[in-house]
Length: 506
Image 1 (cartoon, rainbow, N blue to C red):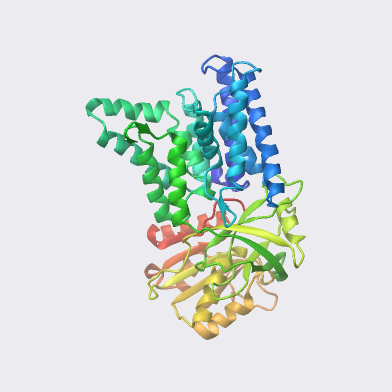
Image 2: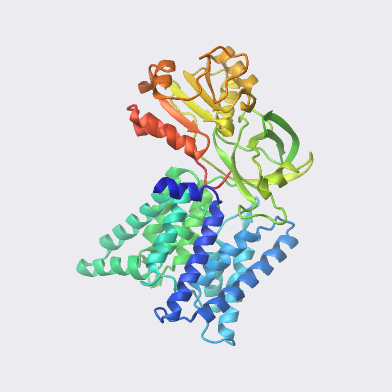
């Protein structure tokens, strides 16, 4: 069942999953309103959503034009739908109070992405910031009406899909544990148990934890800091935490967490200029970019690449690509496979010419070399999934650092194999052996020279000490999952298997 869910989620971007969840929640709220299970009619829920969406869209366009920055309509839609779920709908079309509140919050939410940004990276969750500004200047806050018992089942289902897509269950669970633990420790007796029930069933904790807490742009990217971030926010979210008579609202809690995330996370947003596009395999190309500033990263990490283009399809204007270059190289490189039919994003990427620019940010990823240089490793790559290994191998070559590594590289044919020259250099200079796997062997290959499948027998023959090694898997999700299952069946401990993962469709 989970494989089926993952196969569906892998077809769309993380941002589109969030967008669909929010639309699902608004639709569920409208249905509940028809039966008077929540105190808002579907008519006014729709009216509220349209007003907030219009203000967000117009404000986003205006700020993008004024600051000469890329406009991301998908981000504006997500912020608008979050605001529509936490700002109470009006009871009448002429409700001036609602129009002022919604308009003010929406405009400030969009402004936060441009005005309160450092090195082109915004600091705060836009929806939370917009609500804080309404409380500060208008003395009005959000009701967080999404946090009701009737909405809870829909919030849980939608939140599950979001957390599954971006692999942030650790953050969500840690937030929940920290929240409950704080209530129980600071609460008094049986009353604290009632507060826990209220916090989890009748408060927006689940929506907050799955949708807003997990936003990648304002949360830490490193897993260690991500867990601490969830602990901090869970602690502050508890109703028992206060400073004198001042109690924190959910949006203030999130802004405090965002500041923590900014301090401990990568702060760079790069404007990259294309230098050249190099064919590296059938329908695969390496894009070489110069950067407006230096980027410090570890081999194997990835960036979010934003390519604004008109008439974007359902997969949006953002992608996550592993950095194929080594930190020792001046330019930044990515390897991209182009399938047919290509997405609008990849068509726009392919249409880039030398001198054109693209924006990259959100450096992240722990698919990196172990600190212990004596550990024996096996890299297993499928197709363009070799890019993180290209980064690692180029780094080892440049540093003249020898490690015990075997690369198993699976492709349909020899023509689909990327970075052949570099892999040959790695074998000559560092002794890194490459075992090619071809579905279709080269024409001049001797019978049995190249395996057509990576089976337990092939692995045991080629890597007889496989139980002593750590495995790094990178490639299509179906391939990574299949090889992970195979390794587990061969007795390889789960802790010795690392999977390359980044949130979003690539």
